[in-house]
Length: 144
Ligand SMILES: O=S(=O)([O-])[S-]
Image (cartoon, rainbow, N blue to C red; front, side, top):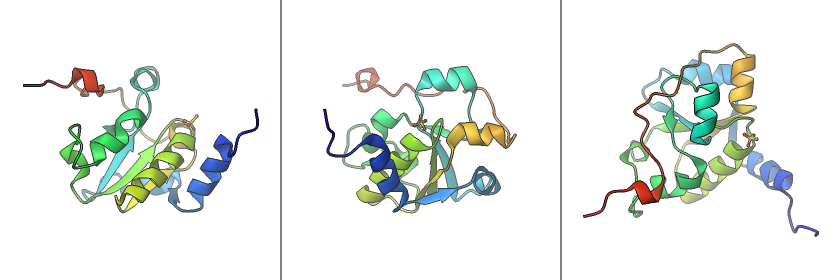
């Protein structure tokens, strides 16, 4: 099967339009109250590898719905006007997600090039996933 666009082409196109930070640049920003790091990996990846301390976990599958104020799954954490810096394991999913959020009008938004792997490689601080991280699946949302 010949794809109209391959995954790496999508990533390259996204990266041409979004801001990419090095792990060191993101680290320098992480204590700024106007900046929120966002971990878009699957919860199992966080459990296995840990995460960046203070990052908000927003799985990629729910991201657009958590960001959109019109969505029933909207999370006020995305309505703060902060700069959102996304990361994933290797910087591919976060490039696509940052492009999508930028297209939605969330600004400013950036991602960490090389993702959590590059962060660990740079020996920057990590922490276990807090056990209180909210469940993200729509079916877990209480109704009524
Ligand atoms: O999307 S990824 O870079 O984490 S494999």
